[in-house]
Length: 116
Image (cartoon, rainbow, N blue to C red; front, side):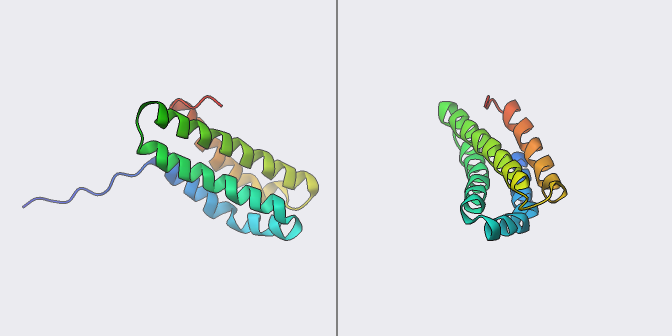
């Protein structure tokens, strides 16, 4: 009898999805203060996860390109969260856990070859 192997997970994608989960309420709060900034954060967070997923299923230059795009979106998200804190829409403590997760994603992307 053959046992099924559980599906492999991709840790960088898992951490990016966890960041989305942790920042979901914060992004909603930011959107109530600044709709455009909230939408931009939501889009950039989604881009990180989507490009990680696509890159993991790609090869060669396409793989590196998707990971580099994910890295750029990760940096955009982090900058936008700092902007939201600077405007006083949210406090630093509210974004700290999400920032730490995004920092982990950035380190993983660096190890995968993304150099943004």
